[in-house]
Image (tube, rainbow, N blue to C red; front, top):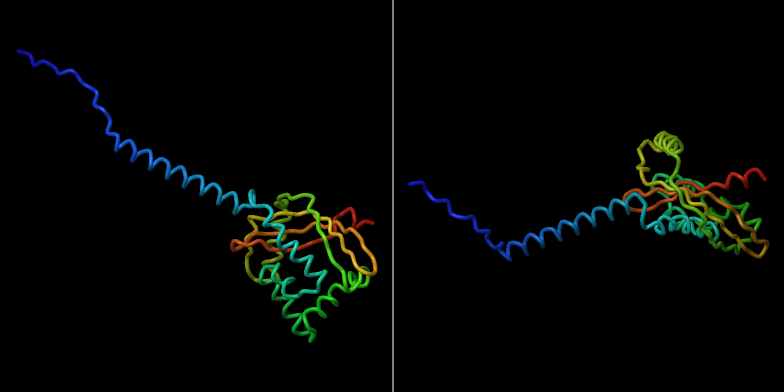
Amino acid sequence: MAEQKKPVIPQKSDPEKQKKQQRILIVLLILIAAAAVMILYNNGVIGGSASKKPVEQYLAAIASGDFESYVSSMPERIARGYKDDLEASGLDGRAYMRKLYADYVSEFGDDMTVSLEFTDRSRVDAIYLNDYKISYSQLYGEEIDISSAFELDVTATFSGSVSSDEIELECFVVKTGGKWYIVGCDYKSDNAEE
């Protein structure tokens, strides 16, 4: 006699097992979202206002003559050059800054202040980045991570007892070691020709 097959009866799924799988899925989704946010933040795609801070600090330090604030807006190797120059000059920090930016002091006055308006933020051209990386390496004997580098266009309004003027600048910032630093600030090209 042939053995009779039993009908397959679908079993109810275990509700505890389903809840456990849902919790695992939720935890995985949270981890993936957190990783995506960290990647975007580290590359400067989000959190762009943090990249403005070293520019604000740098220009405010020029206006106020605050040497410590000035050098802390820069990567350590760049700051070290200014610290060594200050020591060799025999001046205090404020006198050194006033000498370094004597043209600003004579144009605006020793009581100058600065206000900033950021007008654009863009990735730095790859060719320029490579040139900068090579120059930095030759000057300081070490590599700098410039994978997160941006150009910030800013209008700086300097005012003082002598005069007041708007200056358009292109400032360059990099994120290294989890912190943003300024690595250069130039007059905007169209202003340089005037």
